[in-house]
Image (cartoon, rainbow, N blue to C red; front, top):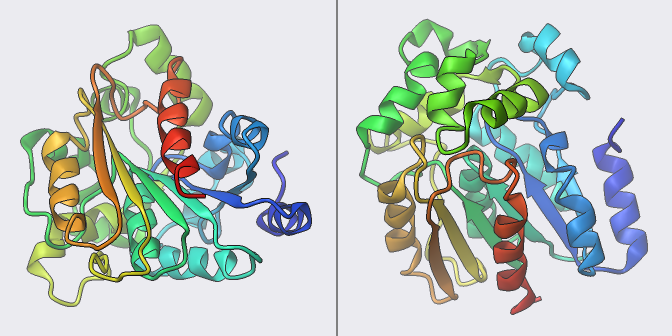
Length: 277
């Protein structure tokens, strides 16, 4: 079983090293970063993979109890993560994927991170593009407004399109069976409507000078968060006085942090944060 948030934070504080905090997105658990943690530890960081509120400890439990995360909103998850990060003795590097990439940018805008990497990040208010492939990817979660306080899984066919379209079917199925869990419907609904809701929680302070350096990584074949959304986030974020960069990894989909070539993504993130921390 993976260590708890508190255990990881205590270990990071005791190490004296800069923490590297990892934030997962929809349909995943904190354990989806397990292969990244030793990689960053070997590079001299103290890795910490944080959970969302109420998150079950295992994939099996998460599939049996989808109600555990039902109703979680972007604002609630961001506040939860900010509280945990606040117990670290050093400002961490924060790395997030998908909605975790959105949360990474929200946290960076609050000045809690020393450097940040947002991988295939879900859009925040002000990112205006809404590609058809994104809509198709999110339809299972956003089609029924009554699902807002529910958590739902993706079928393999839905996951294959939204998450793992650039790997072969065998690898896609392996990723699905190992990692995929029900996810709360509220965050994708919030992201889809962010530009129509002036009070939305899905907003990042892109001008805060304490935001720190930020890298956005985009998978070139990602159906869920294609280049239009990643570049849209970059265009908003480059207004910040801090370093802002974007890179597109060609031939990679939304599962780029999990597939057999995950280390390319990890090394891209690692090379960036090492320049500043």
